[in-house]
Image 1 (cartoon, rainbow, N blue to C red):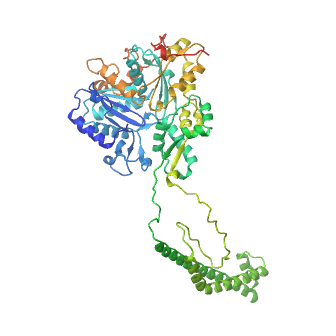
Image 2: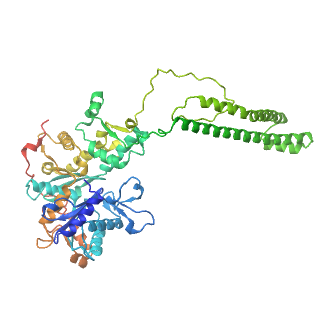
Image 3: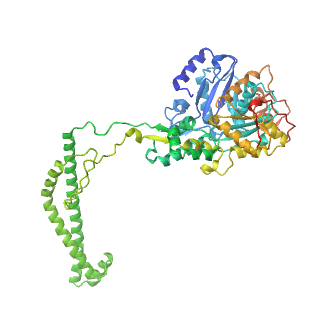
Length: 593
């Protein structure tokens, strides 16, 4: 759960008193949330001390100090057009916002040292992160904050490492990681403890696309509540009420049953106001208000009659002036005026003159009779019963006085409940939105789903390597928390794997926090001083070699990798023979048919 601004300040005051002097600072950077804390063995620092949304808001022309970060923004929806993130999909590109995020984190964690941050830092990043982005991040940390050591790692691999160490699997982990976050999903094959970067694949479908799809569906379903169906509400609704169907078509058929629909539909109450406009106004005040409206409308009608009479009189005078030209024998000017009036002959001119003379005469008579008619109509209108909220139309005294058929007194009028009107019935949307992980075509995306991409990655290995990889399929990421995702993947694998082959699918115990626990465990087991510097970049090496140290770390596979390598540890396309990881026989699925 994301802490509030008050809890952030509490963390700051508490940590300022008991700040670890030699602890490693771990920052798990995610597209949606940033988690930061200390990698120390004390129980009070087990969870991340700071969790907030990875966004910043600053008005145009505002000072840098006026920028709001994360939980300091009380409501995202009014400021959504101002929100900025350091990410482009899952890669950091806006380092000005990244610097503001770092300032926010260090301040709230109680780091008060002047000029530098004297703690090693572990950062998570996207698989196969571009070298330029890592070089810019290293430059920011070493040049601006003066950190002593920095380590980069893939968040999904940290979660994979944490899960394997919990099960006491040997360090040379082999398996395949399926990670789905906010903007992207990844399929990461791990061979003998090293990431096979050449066969990693990304699917541009994840939590943000599912939330946008849910918002579109509910906008079409409830066009009267467009302003209330916000993206923030859709993200909350998606993660709390959605699920993944084991068999999508079969589950949709179940929703055709009215009994199943009534049992499974979720009703969401939107905020509303039950106060009825004008409910405290007395009958006399409403009658007086009605009389004022009638008088105002009568004045408007009279003014319109006068304006129309004046316009008709001016046009009649102009036509009579053209007719005088004919009587005076000025034929050239007469024909020229007829062309300007878009008329063909004098007979047409005379016809228009007759019509306008009749209209002017009738308008004068109506104007003379309007006072008496308006007064009589005002009295008759005030004598009629007044309904709450009925509109008053423009009244024309010449309107025929036809009596409308009266409604029967015994006809029951439907009662409108304001609370029921502001309810959302979320039915098949609960399974249609998460389904885009497996069928992106539902949203119009022309790309493979998660299972098709996994099958494509497995096809790039030999049958022996495939057996080793599928023996440890690991699911992690915040978008893997839907109920039924593990069962759906097992069913899909059962259909595509060879006969009598075995596989095992494991879901992270805490998909959203697995990366945090893995990065913390790795930092504790591999300190940058005294325990070897594999996976770490020191400030001394950065000052000696500059940004090239990052390139060397990525490209030099000669040093032995740690149990969970940071993103630097990759393998070549020529992989050695694999040995399947130890698995629990009770959880292994076998393809028998």
